[in-house]
Length: 491
Image (cartoon, rainbow, N blue to C red; front, side, top):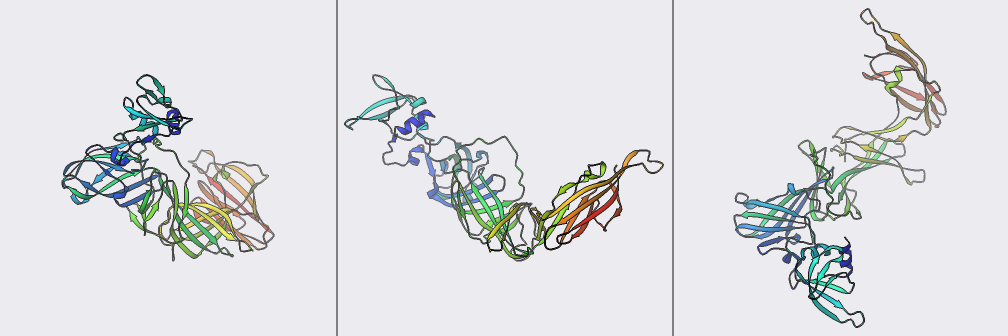
């Protein structure tokens, strides 16, 4: 707003006497709970921009009715999820009302709250530097503010003017807050726990896979990358992460309550700091030590670490099922086999549920320098499962696929009067290898419908009802051709 910028340039002073902002913000009977009273904070973060905050503070309470201002909640809090409880006296404890105050203490908001009220205007003489004081009534907070003096009305946007306010109005705080009314059975210092859901908290898994020289073993390190854009920080917090697809009811896009700031990055040591356990149909990872997660910060904590894990490397060419129902141009398709790496999630450092994330693969070159060789998405992987990664496509191994024959066959049998539902196709797959050593390429052809292999240059394996597979050896610096004919009956 223009008036906020103008008043900020004019340097607004707030007269607070000997009280704090929090004290003046509270009403006559209100109590304040701020972070100085915090005993413990715990964060559970989900992978879909959602976090559960559990904040315990030691607060002096009266018996029966209490009004409490809980400062420093997340700016992106979902207020409808907030719950306050007294663990020691839960039977007689009852929340009556809870509200989230969106208005934060700013020059513009302060001026708005003083419309119709008196403020003191201090002017500095531009030549002598002497100060003078006048009392004025705030008529409007728009466009720099309109002030009514005893003999005139002025716009209060002079760079030499300072506005002095006697106090901060009630329910106007310098930090996001919850106002809570409740009944408490016992007076005295007690622990209160506030829990709520907030957006702006998320995490993901990141993996680094370093291949050895022969590409048959790898060192694998995993981190949980945690992002805090919720609008507040969490000092010395117990951190827990949930892996899995937690369902949420969508009620429209959330309203942004603050501007996004630049994020800081802090990497943790390459150690396994998170301990997994089951939670409903998800997996819960708990950090074994407290962590401080500052506002607008990204941190990484160790998820797993394993060395010399056996890796299987494979070159795979996968076709498409539309090949078998029509005639294609015979000039040939230029293709490249995919490079696939796989390992089993077991052994020392593994054998735990691996959350979904991105695996980045590396290998040292002939000079010993580590080089990036590709990345792939990893799905949630249970203990003992095979994890498959695709860093990219082969460079020195190329493939040319060509359809060599196609014919449409009539229906078969006296009860099958339909024509054109049976096809016979023939293909040649020519594989070339520019490397100095022989390679084996796995050729997988998905074939729809009821199919029968009529002829082939080498025997196939029927790995599933609609998949034929060949292991084709291609000599060093040479080539090899796979030819096959298949009959397909579609229903």
